[in-house]
Amino acid sequence: MPSFDTVCDASMVDVKHAVENTTKEITTRFDFKGTPAAIELKDKEITMIGDAEFQLTQVLEILRNKLTKRGVDVRFLDIGDVQKMGGDKVKQIIKVRSGIETEMSKKIQRLLKDSKLKVQASIQEEKVRVTGAKRDDLQAAMALIKKDITDVPLTFDNFRD
Image 1 (tube, one colour):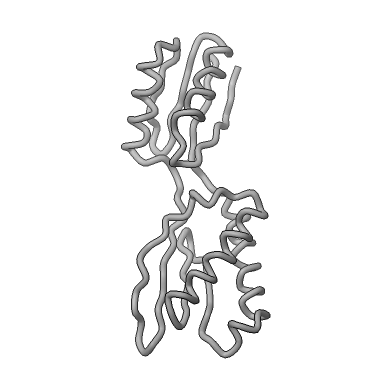
Image 2 (spheres, helix red, strand yellow; image 1 turned 135 degrees about the vertical axis):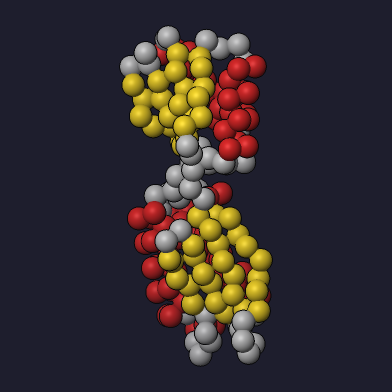
């Protein structure tokens, strides 16, 4: 039976390279000389450190540009609040989204059920598997999901005929 998986996963290799390129640019830019501005990636968390909130927004803008150049959707970033550190430093933690949340999975499942397409959606951990009798129905389901779910960067993989 033909099927495909709907997933929400960023390429962590590209994210790592974008963070490294951002670090290089921070060290070479004149307006960051002599400041504690830094960015680092640990697991699926990016930590930005700077003197002021303004500096963090500049670092975030550089990171967004580097991610876009690498083809990583910036909607994968879950940007946290700015936190005060010791002294006059501030930090901000950005989480890289991985997997579809349960609420979003149920929304996709309901969307496919209400569409009257001859497909079934099943939630499997952090992805949604869609199965159907015909390949055309699956392609219609993909188009419907792309059109209606815009707040999360979804991709489709594991297409089986």
